[in-house]
Length: 246
Length: 286
Ligand SMILES: Nc1ncnc2c1ncn2[C@@H]1O[C@H](COP(=O)(O)OP(=O)(O)O)[C@@H](O)[C@H]1O
Ligand SMILES: [Mg+2]
Image (cartoon, rainbow over all chains, first blue to last red; front, side):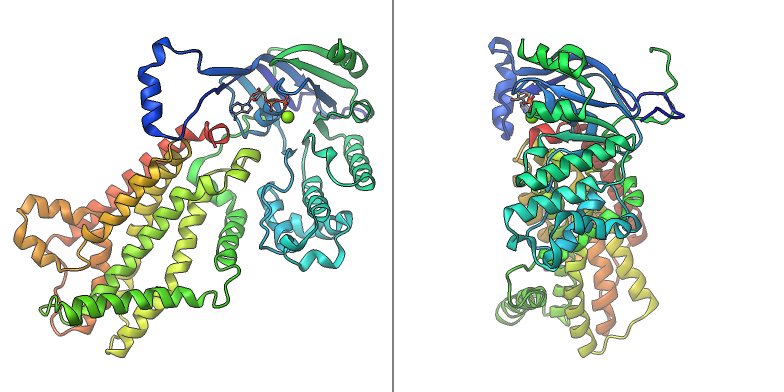
């Protein structure tokens, strides 16, 4: 799809660093003792991301590649606002929605219907927007008449389908996908991939993390490769996959 | 691409604090409804418990303090006096306690999706208010039995008391809720405050006794405590009209009210600032 009107990027990541505390404690006393002993202790922080910069343009689909622990999820959480960088800036334009961990807001003692409304609201939708999409959400999830049953009586497959369906129907400009495409059974996975492709064709901007390189190739033109928190490659997705393996 | 036009760009994860409840009022409503509709899950009697518990509490206090120990024969209708104070303490303890735990309890969400985190303590406090209504119903019922008639003064005093106690709970709840994410020690502070709340307000005794024992300056401090002020307003609303000559307000009640309101506002400001500071670490510390 051609880029229209606004040529500016949707996501700007500029010199971002993210540190995590290594041994953190929930006890005030232990934290106090650790503070006093700090001088002769090993480093207490771990750099999950270090000086990462890139931009994602309007309508672009970019894969974030890297081995386990290389900082992919951390990067997506910074873009979604769940985490804040310790240095550098992250900027986004438009509505950002994350398929980061679907179903996080589901409550087992509420019905499917109530959970749809609650989770749509958690993802930033209002009542009218949810009403307008409700039938599509239920249809996509293939839940059928179970929609009015409590979610705790769902099979795990049904649960995942409904959660995913809500997340994918959120009104958005930028979609963040982190591994969730590994959920559900094969036909449903295929359906999800198709839906994400559809969104890409509509000109939505995407940042995708997936272990399935086939899917990455299918969905994205460009790849950013992370290794131990540093960006080591940014370019066409085929070359990015080579950089990852090399 | 260094000199770009950045209008329309946002920094992810920066809300506007408690003011976000206006923009996110729909989600807030759903979160409150979730809390109220799942409160008595798997329970046969459900909301009846919300009536049974305060009624039992009332009866115990009444018989033990009033009938057996014969406390306060100087306070007529002691049962109503007691109960109108206790409901304030119950509301405070529940609102403040729930708000403190709200972030940790919602960790699944806080760790994965960004939304203004202030929504959780606020939803917890409004949920506590909903749960408080059955207690007010019981109090009203008992009051009506002994000939209480509603008046504008009573309703005004009741509402003012509510505002003070909820504002104070919100301030403390934001502060300890944020603190609790990092250090679970917060829960112990909260337990102590909850325990003290009953004894630092004229609930089990009258303010006149305190005035008679404490020096003037100490009594002033005792009375600007928002819990004490709220308790006095509820006494005024529910207990005073049911007795011949009630205790009335302590002298300088207006100043105590202003003091309690200012104190609560300052607590909200401190709570919000602390919350904003610590919020940056919520997702990674949980
Ligand atoms: N909340 C956290 N506290 C401490 N360390 C963390 C936290 N989240 C992630 N990490 C660490 O940061 C590194 C990067 O994690 P992540 O971004 O999840 O990697 P990926 O998604 O690429 O597998 C890992 O070593 C992980 O252990
Ligand atoms: Mg990951």
